[in-house]
Image (cartoon, rainbow, N blue to C red; front, side, top):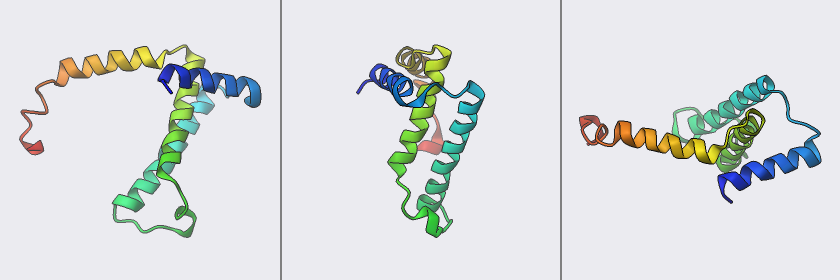
Length: 108
């Protein structure tokens, strides 16, 4: 599925099952909540924190997909074409950083 197809699929799901998009502020709060859930799993899986019983059945991919879902909702409701925005962002990063990381002694 392309990003464009994902945006269309989310829009169709919202229209079919979701009644309407939550407002932008609510979706921003939800995005923050979902990022926090991902951070919790990462901290317990790769960091020093131990798992709580309620964390043990969490799925890393599912948490990332939750973030993508809310981000796509925000893009759809604010008129952002994520395919175009991502392509521009990749170009910006490439131009800005094409040599920067290779010169970073910390990465060698």
